[in-house]
Length: 72
Length: 493
Image (cartoon, rainbow over all chains, first blue to last red; front, side, top):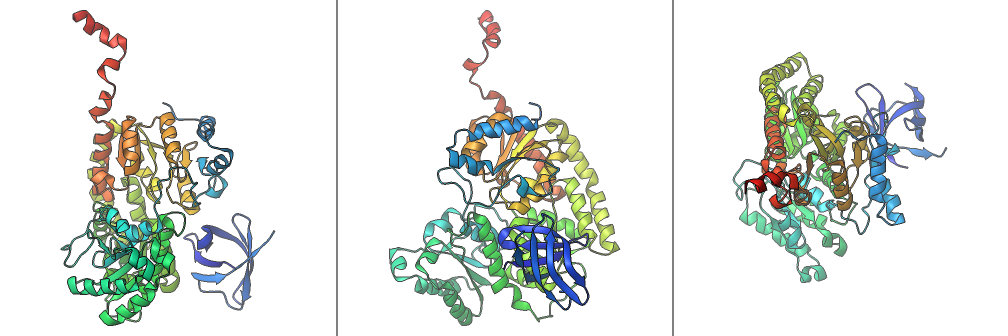
């Protein structure tokens, strides 16, 4: 369960950063991304997949969240 | 020598790797790469931030070096105790030339060495009592200090001293910020983890000191310069540009910086990161906790300076945007003159770099402004995100080497035959003896500043006087010169 720091890049894309792994990737797709539901499966720029526990309201970015790594 | 093709570079890497045993070869191969600008991510071509191989010469430092030497050391009005045996502090004392203003020993302590000087007794019975005594002595002898940081050396972690407890007790007693930093040298693979630990210590012990205190008057143009260590006055040369364009620099992290500036940083509007590697952690933290955006900038060479000034200005209103244009315009004649003078003397010269965590990519623009070409670069302790940012800066088919070993670096230089090598003091004399002009790019070879427009003039002059120094022509002994050259002399005799 790595802690993931989420921040917005200048062009509006979400960046997914895990300090321990030096992983800084853009988020390509997010399963739920609406005002009443946020989270689920995320696909990163390098193709790896992580999972955020779905939330009722979108988080205030920048923020650190726990994510689960999904195996392919 | 013309630029190398991809195949030639590949062959060179293979040839250099040839001497290693099978296992070492496989490991080192991952750290050497040929730059390919089409790649978006560096992890496809290079591995970094891994443990150095036993038996090879690495140029890296330790976590203590990263914390005490880089991040904490330059904070001038604090006293940094090198807690442990005397050597670590003494041999690194004032070596980094972080300039500051103040009266050393009275209200600033940058070039002094404070150590708890561990002996056998302290290792056996624990050193906490001695540390407490040290802090009391410091308070007595240097009452104008604004805080104390305890920089752990290896034995502290090994014997399990509780420096946090001592800090808390003494903090209450003296009512001063006392920061225990767990930066024992054995942690991590290089100084890079020391930077991270130091950032975390600032986050935990200093940054929130003035939360809820709104007495500091702010303006919409407050910025903090983060990751500029004022080597040879770099931060001053950067600061003038920012102030000229209308911004107010509230804090300098940490060259010529004070603890009060650091405590005020959460009140700024934008964090400007120069050394991404050593200070991105705190910038990310401030973005999350205080909602302060941060951007990276680069003040080496006029092209990059103009680009950075405009990018910084884009975060502010029109007065700052006009300010940026005004600054660029004001210095235009000055830097054009520098380029006009030095470019003809330096055009086409090839440079190989091997530096710490930021300059391997940041100085490329400055060399290019002078018509020079960087043909190889590498980081001592960079991570993948540093290489991601390097790929686009470097030309295609140029060499990238991570945590290069002494042997590899020598072989690369022998084969690539650059006109200049830029690295540190440990490499300097090897290459000078090989007859290759050399500049120290950590300490600017006791020159500087190199940041900003003023720094660019000094940078250009220094590169010229190194490369075009007449001494490089006298490298061959007169009796070893070609026979044909000595022929006419004989005839005269």
